[in-house]
Length: 310
Ligand SMILES: Nc1ncnc2c1ncn2[C@@H]1O[C@H](COP(=O)(O)OP(=O)(O)OP(=O)(O)O)[C@@H](O)[C@H]1O
Image (cartoon, rainbow, N blue to C red; front, side):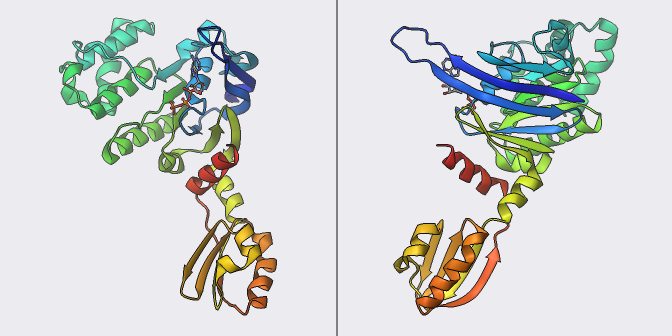
């Protein structure tokens, strides 16, 4: 069953002043997130990630389209008790201790004292903050704040966790800790939907990914499938005896030409272009040294798709 269904969601931000133009924040966005999966929501700055999350959480209204969360209509208030949310820039009550902060959010989520007494220390331990439970948040480092923010989203044991840029501003150790927490949530059967522009984090933890740019879905699917699809397309050729830039066909189709003496490396975005390029190389008196299908990665796909979406 699906944890999130977005169907044809569009958002036009209406301007505050009559002389300002409306901004199309989202344009016909549709995707589903299955229960129990980690779903990465990837996009450059201004792609519409936060807008989507706000619409999911009922903090902003869509101009068009519909959403369902955990099998219920998105505007059903009851479903929000089953969701945890970490905003991009969470507000922290500086003078509360970690324990007080979590208890406060737990009470907001409808938890009683008995449940809180068990949940707060065990969650602090899970996010590695048990030693700091009596410390005020104003004395926390950026990484510790991110972890307490994550704990706040998890205190009421939600089925679906929505995290806006959970790794932002963290060092590699902090990012790994957050990734481990996300993985442990999946082990406990939870669904995690998180936005990021850190591609390696998506590659490491996500089951599926949606790439968004300028409010539109550019790619959607399993990370390996998207990468393999791309890997079948591109090919790296090394040839000698030619100046790549002098051959019009190569100039036209190659995404990269590197020349060292008379040796030339040519990157083709599509395998189907290989035959005609090899013919052109031979006709110019060149010799093929190697032709290797390029192993794709999410970063290349991301850059390619977001450039095409411009
Ligand atoms: N309230 C608003 N009024 C007008 N425009 C808005 C509003 N909120 C967002 N936008 C615009 O909508 C687009 C998407 O913004 P959004 O914050 O959702 O992007 P994002 O993918 O979360 O970006 P980032 O990674 O920088 O946080 C941007 O062009 C932004 O300027």
